[in-house]
Image (cartoon, rainbow, N blue to C red; front, side, top):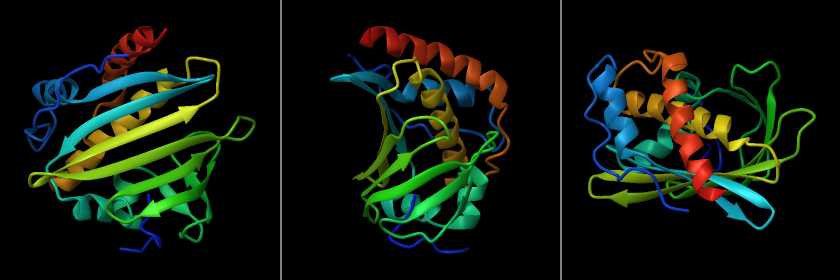
Length: 201
């Protein structure tokens, strides 16, 4: 997620409320608050499918964008990003998977929109779009991952993106993004994304 140049330094499920009423160290009630306030949807787009996440962050679009364009912050909540970071650039992203994925920046509107390709070796090229809009003193964030993969790819992709956004939420409020029990959380998110996928079937 990059601001032109990266700098060093089916029905929706759940209704959006304030997702940031979390304590310093996420507890069961913190996670429940996130799960209940985040909207998730699987859409059919012709032969393709789209996994859509919508949540509200207690930070301005500019602050959210900064967290998505600063290498040190990206490493804390998302991944290690390598490459020249500007429109049209190709990047290598290490999210902890066996292989690095490749991404190309397709569209960049600072503090508003970011669209990029998403591809693992040996698989097709997906597309991800992040949209930001001011919402009071906070930001409404939409993340949409589109793919022509015929498998239930959205099950893992939706959970993976949602865990990343929870980490982003912690970073924005000044907490440690690594303080999350991802294995247990992934199980809960998997159930919710299964429900979203069935609604699209």
